[in-house]
Length: 375
Image (tube, rainbow, N blue to C red; front, side, top):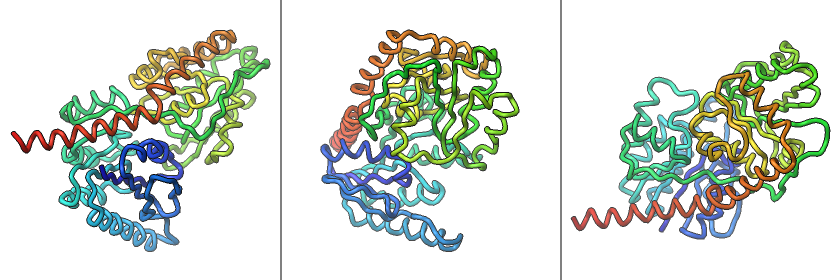
C-alpha cells in the first residue's frame, strides 16, 4: 500500500510524526510537510514542499502557492493508493486541489481533528461538508465525533473510522506525585476562550485564603491575541489570584515539557466544548491525573472519570470542589489513577493501536472497491 500523508503543522504538532513511526512498518509511507519540518527516519520518505513562511505578504502568498504546485505534482507523479490529508493551511484552496487530483490516486482519506475550525466562518460548514462527502474515509478520534458526523453532517457510519489519538512519546519520563505542602495544578495548551481559563479563575476566586495556601495553578501555552484577546495575567491579578496563579505565555519547547510536568500533580481541562484534546493525551503521557469538565469527549476519553475527576462543565463551584477533592487525595488513590492511565496509554491510546485501526480501515477500502466492481 503506497500512502501519501500531508501535514502542515509539523514540527509544532507531532501527531503525524508519532503516527508515522508506526505506520512506516505497515505501509510505504511518504509524508508531505512544511519546508524544514522533515524528521529523517528509516521507513519514511519526506517531501518538505509546503509553504514555510515568507518575508512579506507577497512572498508568503507566492511561497504558499508554490507549495500547492509541488503537492499537486507529487500526487500526479507518485502513483499513490491513498492520499491522507491531516491538515489544511487554507481549506478554500486545498480542498479543491485534492478533489481535482482524484484521478491520480485510488482513495482520499481525511483525519477530522475538528469537525470545523475553531474560528469557523459561515462558509466553512458547506465547504467542509462538501469535502467530507467526497472523501472515501474519514478518521475521528472518538465516538462522540463519529456521532456528530453521522447526525449533523449525514455521513454514513461505514465511511467513518475511530482511531484514538495516541499518547505522546516525546519523553520516557513518568512523573511521580510531588511530595510537599503545595498541590500543583497545570492547564497546558494554546490559550483559547473555549478552554475555560476564565472558568478556572472564577473557581479559584471561590477558595478561602486558607485553602489557597495549599494550592498553586500554572496556566501555560502559546498566546495569540486574535484567537483569545484576554490578558489572563491582568485578569488573575484583578481577581486577587496573583499568589496562587502563574500565567506563562509563549511556546513551551519540547525540552522543557519534562520539567513542566514534573512540577505538576494534576492537569486541568475546564473546557466549554472540544472535539478532541491532544493536551489530555499529553497529560496521560506523563501519567498525570486530570480534572475535566463533563463534556462528552472528556467523559469518553477519561473512561467516565477513571483517569481523574469530572465536574459539571461551566460551573466554577463544581470545579472548585473538584480541585479541593484532588488536593485531598491519598498517595494510594493517586497511584491507582496513574495505573489506570498507564493501562490506557499502553492499549487504547497507543500509537500502534491507532496505526492498526488506520491500516485496517485502509484495507477495508480496497476490499470494498473489489466488491463493488464484482457486483
